[in-house]
Length: 104
Figure 1 (spheres, rainbow, N blue to C red):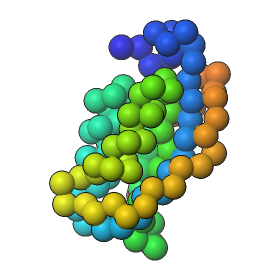
Figure 2 (cartoon, one colour):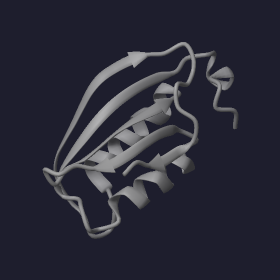
Figure 3 (cartoon, rainbow, N blue to C red):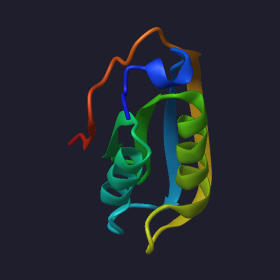
């Protein structure tokens, strides 16, 4: 699958997220990377000093929607998500990030 948006009529979107709950020390970032890659998305994820996980996801809107559901409902096997906040959702003309990785 191409990540340039050509398979979705050129439609791409970007969304920022912050996940609350027991989401650090439970491989949340690793599982988020795996899920993002599985969906063919680009983005990043990182732990915060406040105990949350933040990041950004970019790709076709329907795949970004699937990732939003995963981030807010599923997460890693040991995680307990209490709240997911999504912000700065916008259409983008092209991907601004390549790959999906953990930032430190």
